[in-house]
Length: 340
Image (cartoon, rainbow, N blue to C red; front, side, top):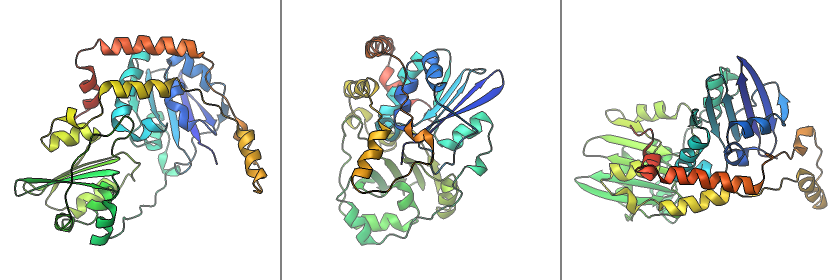
């Protein structure tokens, strides 16, 4: 139980590790207010001997003061919504001026490599192969809309809102094109703020090209395994969500991505949200329902949060938004950052 987070501070060549049992969900908010605030907050947490195993870690922050680099992952809405995360990062880079700011795309693996730790002792090395999908599996999943798959074949473009991620579908090999072709195609929908698709798959059967993006965490071996299945095809991976997917399909991204002001509204609500961590109340509620719970680690009772007033947060956020909105082409630049 918890929302485990790891933190690493590098200063004068020395590494210090910290741990928060409940910190992962609020990492984007906790570090947003600048280096001084983030460092002061992290230094109030429990010191640790190193990073925890990747199977337990739900968020992490690496602050390299020597090189002025910030690397992070965590949160809730921001973690799973590509476009919202990109707006967040654009604002974060303003708050962390003169620092290199990046999202840890490989989660704890990116953090470990950034701080020079051996990830092999932390990773979940088991690669679980996706199961073979029957036509009925695909047909049943059409009632959900977690992922989008677009197939170009014989000059025609078909879209499927489907609940299987790109890796599940690509694992089936080229036959997935024919199987999906027997199912009714649909449309790409523009979703609201914080509600992006979690997977984007584009298959161009005419030119033997595959390009996919997955927002959920994937095993480090996945891309290599998929390329071995799609022999003779060019298989590429991207991190730009619907912005990139729309381009691949030859569509106008503005028609399929949430408007900027809706993103700002949700992001402002998230950053100014007041979280109340009461681990003792959670423990008591479980016991009241008859659960026999023992606490083995005192870190369970941590309830630290950055010591910054709501008024100060509101003022800082307003100033940051003003600077970002004054930039030319700011929304598209945020969405396309790192586009290959």
